[in-house]
Image 1: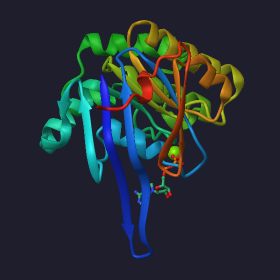
Image 2: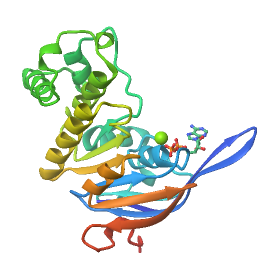
Image 3: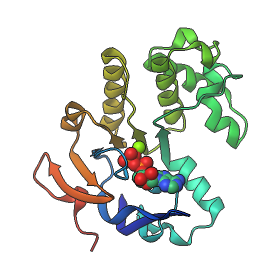
Length: 235
Ligand SMILES: Nc1ncnc2c1ncn2[C@@H]1O[C@H](COP(=O)(O)OP(=O)(O)O)[C@@H](O)[C@H]1O
Ligand SMILES: [Mg+2]
């Protein structure tokens, strides 16, 4: 369960203050498939980064599994982030000097030593994204679409409860996009919560709920079953 309660986010610069998120209230249940849509600059990536503990709200509260994250120390946040969330970034950056398999294992290697079972899991994930035969190649040898699939495998390596994907199918060919979506659906079927930023109405139609955001404010909600959980008031 993820809950945002009157969350706002401002970025300050010499030009002034930019309000990236404005009084966002959200309630996301475990196992939901939520799509986030909105124009460029409307706050979608900021919203994902706050939910994933990569960024702190300027005000308001973020609760994860009933726990208010405000009082967590940086170390606790880092741990919670690593345990709970898998990120597929809009512009995934792979490490060129590592192999594809090592890139997938990176979250584990950063936390300690990768074990044999981790290597096996990495290979299984690479198989799922259709890149098993590339496991020993370096990332710069891959196409953009292939790199995106490596990034997805990397996001899944820790078996996260929540997958945060920022335009994971943007600028990809249809086949690769379908493959990524199918995999996200499969994970959703296993009870994982999926939050995906997309411009594609077809992808949004897949989800349980679509959150529409405009200038940092949540506009409305469409829900498949007519219930209001995605934007239900936090109180
Ligand atoms: N780190 C930052 N510093 C300053 N402004 C930022 C930062 N991140 C995002 N913004 C601004 O906040 C607004 C929302 O950005 P973002 O969440 O990236 O939008 P979206 O993902 O919907 O395109 C934009 O105006 C953007 O320029
Ligand atoms: Mg963005």
